Length: 374
Image (tube, rainbow, N blue to C red; front, side, top):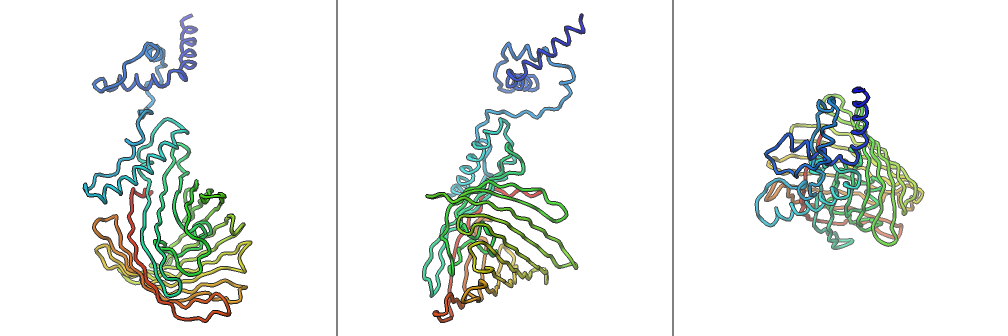
């Protein structure tokens, strides 16, 4: 009879658990930390605690307060009280809090470290060249984790070149937009991403989203990245992307990077990339050779020569030239100044003469949040 009563008691506990789960957590917190300011125990929670099976006492529970305000989870590291630091902290808190609020629909627990891993940047600048003259630019991007949905998901929002972002046909310097042969202006993109943990040097990620505006233009893409060192000072990186978007329809991009560490402060990189889609005339491609020089104290140069074009066009080589990029930290470790100078020889049609085209640009980039590294 006593055994039957015990079974009935345990069944009652299991049936009552969903209704009084929150009270159980609060009661446990009060029992472990009686000196803290905790809500008073209610009679229902006392009943559940009394009927709780003994084996449950041995289960380790990490207490999380589901009522924690999102703003409390998104505190940036303490910094100086100057206006620029306050602007940076405000950007971080706004985006982090928005992610925590959205992710709250998928559960009650809060994962502080995951939300604080949100990171992004804002870049303000302008470019100029003899052919297209001035092109002011404001770019931003942010990526946030969504741990309640899944640790493999994140959200992206940014004002970028939609063609370059979706097709992955872009070089390593995107603080300023390229001024020649741009088919689309920068636009605000909002998307959801998925990342598969890397194995053997490979990593797969995918994303869906849309370019905000009217009409809304959706996109989808999947990318596989592979990196492997060889012969002591060399590294090869491969990237294969399959995508669909309103302008290009279905397409694929292949990119190869070969890197060699020449000395402690010099790195040489060769990049070649090509995109084929339903809307391209053949393959749209570019190839660059870049020498990076580390000057120390947060300063670096990049010297680059490149060529780009599209097969099956009347002019196969659309542009080639040289450029120098200088980048350094200023004022704070998260604030960067970038200066550019270039000379190119563009040509889009047979009627256009290929002439030298001098260019220059300057931008300030502010980084916020922290990039989590595993």
